[in-house]
Length: 371
Image 1: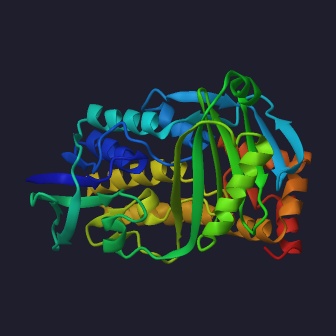
Image 2: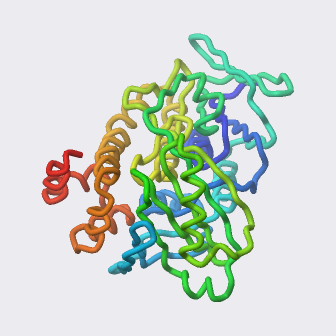
Image 3: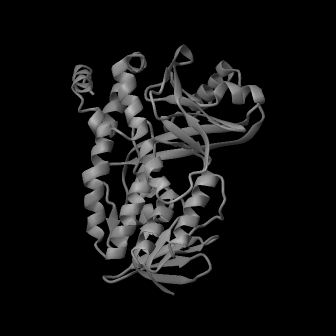
């Protein structure tokens, strides 16, 4: 079979790539190894950047709209800040969100093939070919890898990493009291280990509770999650799902392309290093990869990521360094008008991470603490 563009993976990065390529007139095929709707481990908090992109193409299946954030430091010293004006986050479940994007890709003209597992990739100067588990081969001008950080396309391109974190998460059945207590509010806990944090995200009938810290600390991560649930009084709730996942962040010099094969989203290691937010990176990089593949200007994708996302990731690394060394200071800053305003505008999508660290007061603090 022959196509113009083949997309491996049907999550936000893959579906946004397919939608962009198909909209540009390219014959596009999406190969999704599972079947929508399917569960995906993810906090599911859409910042304003993600929401702005999504609203142009889908009806966002929001489960809650967040106007308040409670901050704690290892379960203690709580305070709550409230948004002035627009909400700061929109909560989605990934099965809903990913299905909506898959439908948007199909509506744009992409052929979405589910239960299609890619086993091999090869290429020559003019085309790339994927081989499926059943032996079928599909050849295209370009292949876009969006099959996650552990997928075949990431390995094929040779993505290298400088940060890996383990996230553990439980989906809890929310009682009526839980819904009333958490509606419109999330909790962020600056954790007991360097660079760690926890969260509670409400999604109507469920609460997503999770923690994350550097890979290699599995026992400590599990203890943190257990202690976090007990502190919140949520350890007795029915567990609907529990899961673990690795987030992987690319090295600044990691490749984004090998010949006619591009990688986007998690497959490229594109995410914000401090918060580990990845949906906005998936939607942006996927859309750019689809546009580049449709126009057969693959280098344009690399330039766009370097100009936009790479600078944001560099800023995120600086903030992660400061947070890892001085979590109590970060907690204090969130209680100040300056810190809250910067965090609020970032969440809304009004201020990029790169511009956050360029604010004079933030820049002075980063210099002071050598971040």
